[in-house]
Image 1: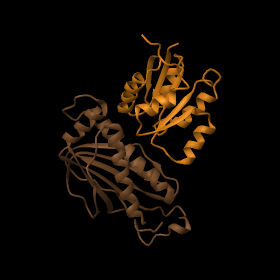
Image 2: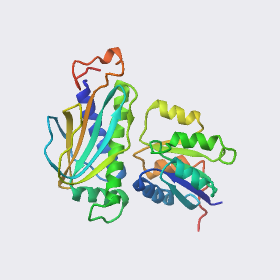
Image 3: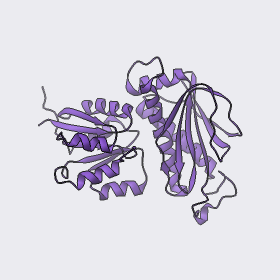
Image 4: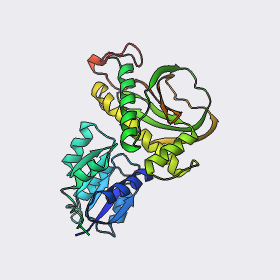
Length: 129
Length: 176
């Protein structure tokens, strides 16, 4: 089954790189949606169903931890896996993300292999042509 | 090792790691020095990130317009010949990753720190100034015939009680 993914980052450059990397992972991905912060992500999720959220932590308006908290406290989004992708390496923020229910954590700068490895247990691989 | 050495080592490690991972290329060896007083006028692209916590200050990245375009081209695998929104965004994200790496290293020595959202300036003949601190730890890296400058200015935050083993004699010279 193909999955829909939401990428949340205030950097358009990182969203573009993640679009490319996600397409290279070999996972069965149908659509990759984008949002520039947590507020935009929640607005988008009001109308679209996604199977995975990849989010930065440090963003204006609503950061990634607030977004994670909102998703995990809402019945319709509680089971959507959320992977944090961020420069933050502090134990406090990692522990907070795990406590709030994050499915994983990737530190920037990242390689395509690191993203693929993190998503291996979450998304299904694409079927061979 | 004092804070100056820790910052220089962190800048070298973070910058090399980011270029190798995200741009698929190697930075040349960094040469470091301390810059005091008012900076010289600058051309090109400058990106800043505020650092806050027990120690506070600014992390910055400076490069020429042509280098910013080259960075963006490698970062996004696109052809870029003029500074535009995409170039400024790429430089901001590069700064976020490099100074973020330095911040993560520093946290082991001075406690939890926070980073602001990056600000990028592009133009000619402008000056930058960080109020309250005049000492910058600067590292210059050669890359594709041009120079990337990464610098950090940091001083103790008087609003925070410093850990006992980090009592400074003056800014950026603590033993840890």
